[in-house]
Length: 145
Image (cartoon, rainbow, N blue to C red; front, side, top):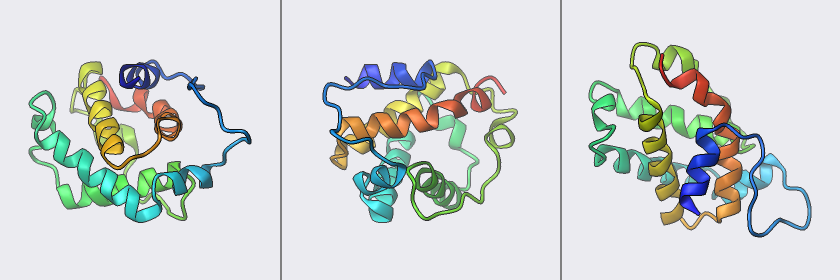
């Protein structure tokens, strides 16, 4: 299932299929709650950053990064994308990633790290898919810049 989630994000689909569909359409605010609100999102981001720091495929991309600021901006971004009461105050994805030469493989590795962090926090797979689906359009602003 994890590979399907990664593939879905990597190709930027606008819809995901899951084994079980909710009985009523979910809203962005529902996703925010399924991620655990701000405390849950903070734990997910922390887990993802730890995973990245231990991932030899992509850790080098973060060597000169202000991790505290990155943590703060990722929390804001996931909060906004999940329908939470936040405002994203960071740079655009294009501005943040220009000159870094992020490859598709790098991008997919980060998605794996995010997915693993959500798994550890017990986020249901359909909620993971909905978040990844909301983040997928950023792919083109991140890779090969």
